[in-house]
Image 1 (cartoon, rainbow, N blue to C red):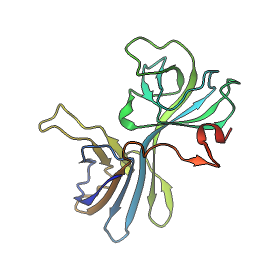
Image 2: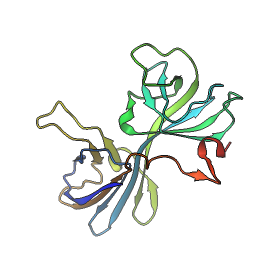
Image 3: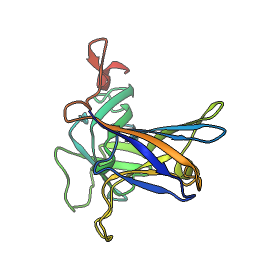
Length: 207
């Protein structure tokens, strides 16, 4: 596991924290009178419904028919139905940097390897959206997104100097003049696979 912690000065604007890698998980603490802790899991989750009869497995890709967005599947969590029955539903877990484009509510085609520029046409699965999850802990826990949360940052090779990969602290958290503490971690290769539950993977457990 790779981890990094440190302190950063709040500015009132969104802050890109450059680590050279995109974390799987981040915590940011604001050291103020009402201490604030924001936790975020930065892997992307794509909700899928109405799966086709061909099972989509970890390591494969999907490409949406309408927008042409594509994503590599890191883990499949099956919530209900079966692939054989054509009604599989659940979640695809992906790394943020292995998604290109914006995935909305549309149909997608399955690929064994990364798809090229050809337009996807086969309706292999229906996807809903890709999201990141974060919570804000003050006196109670509340879901946060956007400026009030933490996002993955893919870097920017077009700036001078170039900006490395990392994560973005939302402007709401990055209050001007406040000191922020952060902790970020990323699984090393081979550590990010899904867990077994009752001896079986989640791609079949919950159906």
